Image (cartoon, protein in one colour):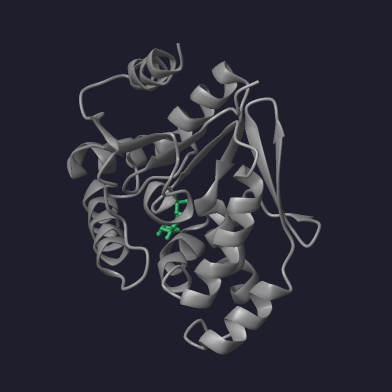
Length: 224
Ligand code: DC
């Protein structure tokens, strides 16, 4: 039997990667892997342990000793750090703000990249992040780069937060997204960029269902 492919979905914050990747994985019966959650998990642990986030040596040491597990149940992905469920904690504003400092540390990226490669080694995974098609699985059979206009991404975040009962100014969200994009695109190692062979999908005026369908069509068409 042919090995199932690795589906890589990269793109900037708020492009809808998580929702789309979850739908695609569910339809295909593949494993969904949220690599951003892994960077968030390391950031959360460093913050809880009051480690200076600029102390790269300490952060890398800590990362080596950290057990990160992703567990899927129904449509939810649970994240465990050293056995503790941190699924909600890693989504806090402070963790979100600090994660790209941690994501710029080479030693941390190497540790997480090795974990991600192990998770995807047998194929049959939908992995989403910033560097999956370029650095983690440069030979992935299916690569997608999901994008949307910055304003639309900010509006989506604002709606997500509103649904959780949090009211934040749209302007503030747009500024935070702009700052995150900038840091993800301009870091020295494994920056966010489109792989040469990735299929680009602009989701600005598309529904999530339609984007997922486009991706599924492309996967099926070359599998058939
Ligand atoms: O996708 P997210 O918002 O949960 O990602 C959190 C941060 O992690 C984001 O600032 C970029 C970083 N990240 C990364 O550098 N490489 C990845 N493969 C995934 C996320």
